[in-house]
Amino acid sequence: MPNVEAYERARDGLERRGPGRMVPDLARITRLAELLGDPQRGLPSVHVTGTNGKGSVVRMVGALCSAAGITAGTYTSPHLQSVRERFGVAGRSISPARFAEVYDEVAVLADLVDEESRRRDGAGADQVTYFEFLTAMAYWWFADTPVDVAVVEVGMGGRWDATNLLRGDVAVINAVAVDHPQLGADPAEIAGEKVGIVKAGTHVVSAPQTPEVTDVVRRTADTVGASAVWTVGADVAVVSRSVAIGGQLLALRVGDRVVDDVLLPLFGAHQAENAALALGAFAALTGAAFDDMEDDVIRHGLQAVVVPGRMEIVHREPTVLLDGAHNPHAAAALAAAVEESFGFRELVLVVACLEGKDLTGILTALRGAASHVVVTTVPSPRAVPVTTLHDAAVAVWEGTGVAVEAAADLDEAVDLALGIAAEGDGVLVTGSLHTVGAARQRFLPVDDVADDDAVVVEPADEPDEAFDPLGEVGLDGDE
Image (tube, rainbow, N blue to C red; front, side, top):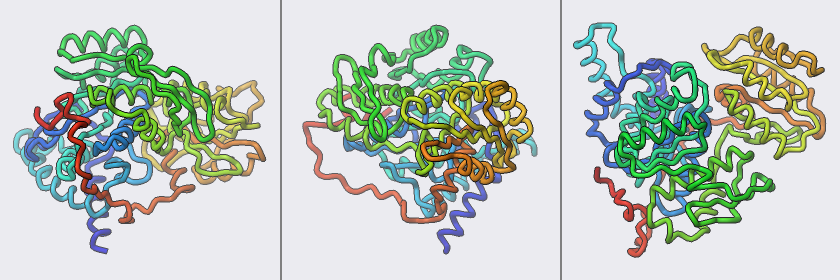
């Protein structure tokens, strides 16, 4: 019980810092990390930004590291069911007890930073935010565990993100599209924020981009002195892909090396591209040591990838899919993947979104996939009202013969969809990661205070002196 109480106290303390509150500067996280001894500076890191696919790439790089015997700490956001999901080592979440301990260790210093801000700027001074606090916890936990490398997802943007205190040995830039209006009005402007994670000596690995975004990436890399820029389609690529049971079978290329028979347990061309991006990042991280790795290391790593809430099957008869698509780019990829990978007779769409998103764009991207639509809302102060979403959906599906219904909450919407779906039909729940998290808790409930997933890093066997997976490129913990 004491562990439960400590964890709940830590979780409540974080909530009081206001999830979603953003302050566009690095002053507080820089000071907080400094008081912690800047633990993030001693860690090699893979830093992942972009509009969609960031979490998938982080998990793929982490899985590849594990297969190669490299202990990777992963930090992702947002979470679906438990804040502990954000912190992982070797695919396991931080335990409630350790989460509470790390929270307490960081809280003393966060309170000091808050007090310094009040003395300097007055009672209304900005306090350490929820995300800044969590990011500092990740830095501290990774150094204490310890891990060999940190694989970290940007919260939003890049330049002013709390994660941008990382060394940034490898910077991954997934496809850039319009999503958060705070970052800019067009992809090139948004890219200007995201490339803020590129630093001197960084090895950049980029997804295919529009010409305008490509120009921003290359110009920034030249300006700051990045060590290299690789792009998917040129330096790394998906050579071939075919639908397979439970996912897809890939052949992936890095430089002149092709690794075939890679079974990726994820659906859609976008996840194949994410796999190429992740493999490029892993090759950049490990350098010359990558050439000495057996192909089976790569196969085993990618075959072990688990990405909750991304085209995840959580129920059968009927098949229920969850996907966190929350912008038109992601929704279009989702629609294509459902059509390619599932032979549904009809598809019932359950959708709930958050404010500030392109509702019409998201729904239009899903227009051709849905046979029946149920709109609803989720318990979030940022949730779009059901009436607003219903009006948008009616306009999108007008004249198609597709029925659009409204439900008061997600449980009612899912019940309605399950009642509509017949044999051979599917149900797709999407529109937001908040929506997916709530639906996942219904189908795959998580006990947030359970202690059975504590990370345990086992002592390694005696290392093979002929193979050091990180040492070849100097990622030995020194700056």
